[in-house]
Amino acid sequence: MIYDILEVFKKLYKEKGENFILDSYSLKDGLYVKINKDDTLEFYELKIVKKDKFFSDLDGIQNSDMKEWFIKRDYYSSYINSNKSLFDKKIHNINYLSYFFKVENADYAKDKIDHHFNILLNFKKFNDKKDKEVLDGYKFVIENEDRKKDILKKCEILKNCFNEIIKIAEEKNIKNYIKIFFDEELEKYTNESEIYLSLKIFNDSSYNKKIENKIYGLSNSNMGLNSKKPFLGNKTRKNATPFMLENENAMMLKKFFDWLKNQPYNEYRTLDRDHFFMQKQSNNDEAEITDFDYIPVKTDDVNKSFTSIHVKNYLYIEDKEESLILDYEIKKLSQLEDKIDDLFYNKQLKFNYYKDSKDIKVSDFLSKKLQSILLITRFVMINYFKKYDDREFLYVIKKYGTEFIVNHYMSERYFKAKEAMNLKLSLEGENMDIQQELQNIKTILNNEDEYKNLTKDEFLFLAGQWAAYLLSLSKADNKNKTLALAEQYFKAKYISKLQSALNNDLEKFKYKVGLNNKKIKKTVALLKSYHNEEKLTSSDKDRFLVGFMVDNIFWESNKKENAEEIKQ
Image (cartoon, rainbow, N blue to C red; front, side, top):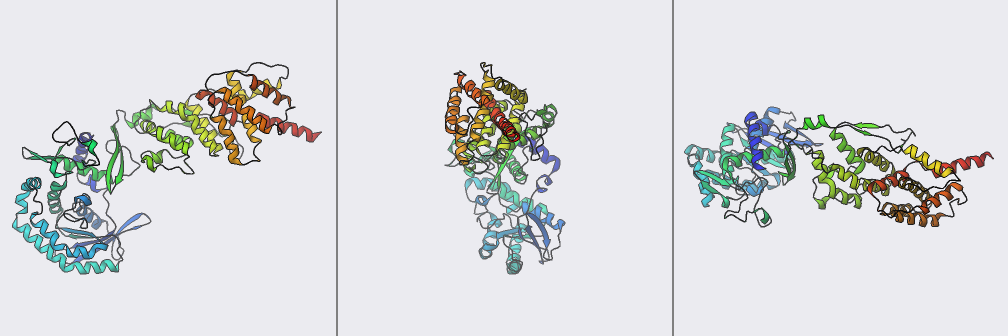
């Protein structure tokens, strides 16, 4: 993965230069101070108002040119992370041309000025053999007398103006950072930064190896070797590092992760949209790659080859105005992803693509059952929608689609359950005419003199109708009780179990059922007389559910009979 990234990133970096990183680099909120060459001070403030950042002078006038000036120097002055500080985690910069600290540590930072500049004067603090090997490459810079004089001069200037800076920070009620910069050319900042990075760019200098005047080490980016990660070590080599980079590549990799950190979280293929899938997360203000894959298919090619999906209103769902919902077309993969997320996962799929399992909590939107299905199936969905690998997608729809629908019903999202059924049937390419099936069942029940054996599909459809009718009779009872009664149907694995549940509910509600009604008598007889010991397939359960959710013929019959009684 690392070498693949480097190969592409180097090309982009060569084309676009440092602005490739700096264009998306953002400053932290706080007070920004520029110490001019004549020792005068300029003050600027970056503050966040309703999630928007504003950079201005102390009079509130925004200044984009100065913001850019600070961005460039801030980037070359900041440490990699607190564990890679120069000498103290509370001092956040890494060269003698700047000085960063948090407001609450102002007194501490004042006491540490001399110590900070003295370290940068000769780097004698870094006396480890491996560190000395690195510093040997910068000996001519560190021992330069003009540099030493400049460091001592800037140290005195900073000490002399420090109290004034703190006073301004207090007057402006600065809450976060104070960042102080000397007015020097950017090249000077980059040169000083290079010394620090050469010392700290690798994860642990103890793994470093010097080969032909080049230093190789374990990357600090997205990598680590410690007691908590023993599985990352290479057990078959004397050097346990899983891989090693030379200093130049490690520097480039650091730039890549700096760039990645500032990319939007909703972008999945930001480095090379035609080849890589990449998902990142932030950890301690650093970017981590949580998923990476090579994509052999281009995004444009996927969109061109996507076959539109016609979603039919199989169940004849009506909207609030009692008008039939129209059929619709899904023309893009991203549109299908949105529909799957909404109608199957109740908008909990994309939101939880890369969360740790322990952080995916049961809620009003995510039942215990849906949580379980999500954890099992989410990576199949990532493979399809983000990596264009559709090999397992339809398998998941066929295996778990019915459970998504049942989950909606058990969570009292009845309308969404019907929408989900329409989508599932459309994805599976069903050619079901539900209105005709209703009519066929009505014809069978209305023919009083003819009793015939039901087909399996007819049985399941009628069983769904009859179960829904029986459960509707319990509406006067507690709603949770009604849902519990419904669950026995949804969990049934054999037709005999469905028949048993139907018999039990008929016993419960027979005082409400007009058993003298010829249609109902025939229904009960047909359902009891059907024999089949096969296990219910996913399609069988769908057939039952369709009968369960569509307009109920028994309530239609009751309405007609009541209307005739009123007329008489």
